[in-house]
Image (cartoon, rainbow over all chains, first blue to last red):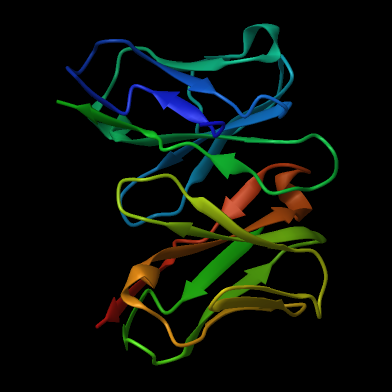
Length: 114
Length: 112
């Protein structure tokens, strides 16, 4: 399978714990995006990388959230001191660099904070 | 601020009953409009990209069209397997070159 891969698919954590998600993009894609989606809503942009550089961050990305993409390959999204409001589906997507092009999504990580 | 409004929120069709989903948008300089399909518990699946008014794209029973203010996703003779949430998204304007704004989707149910 050469699509976008996310791990884990599901995560249940206690409030206050830290969690980390991983995303492996399509190999030839240089752009990588993180989105958050809650029930009944469309995905909301969080941040994006071009190669290893984080080029844009949404104001939704509080200081408890941090994303990295070392060496421009896989990416991680960490949430520190989780809150119940962080419960959502976290989606990763990737695209080529040239122009405005469609992004291809992974299956997401469903986070439940109890 | 870029805005995307999809209607209806939900649509129930009989198998074979054609219909259209609407995506209205406001943006200061559209660079691309995307349609995705999303099944429950899964990530969005890419369907189409449209770049300029008058453009149309087709795939099986689906056809996407674009005007300066809205996009339509036409579904011809739908089958139960077309049941999903259809998302519209746009790139451009105040969102930056690659920040995409999604609508809340239309949940389509096709009854056999």
